[in-house]
Length: 164
Image (cartoon, rainbow, N blue to C red; front, side, top):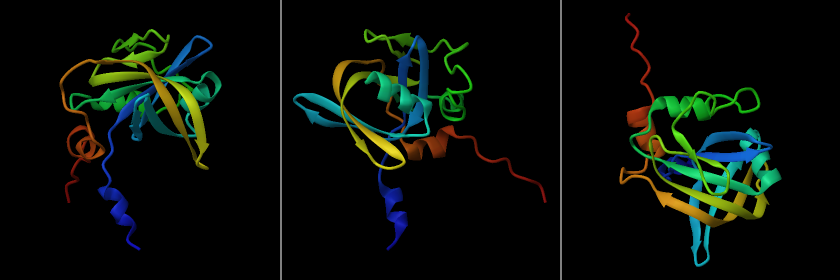
């Protein structure tokens, strides 16, 4: 079996946000999709090690901000390379607004956001699959969505060459 076949699947990149006890948090995820149109439902897969995961388990609410090709590496560092258990990821960050559900969504380097309420969870061992009804959403720009491949090719810094 050639495990590299999995690399041929396409993925978007998203900032998943939640709010619990007056505290905002978010993390980067690569698994979000619409699963039904009527009623409108989405699913997200979230690593159980993420603090955002626990917040969603407790509150049953989340927002997904769809990262565009205009996203900068600092957004990935802020929401993907540190834990909300240790730092307030929204502290000193202006690229967001608060949705009608009370949860932050990212406006900087994104093209849309979706607010959702959890209807069902599926335990996947290391991850939880959340199936949720869409409560609110909006388009923020017409910029193309960033894929995981685009992130590696155009956003993530390349290693500096070392001189022999």
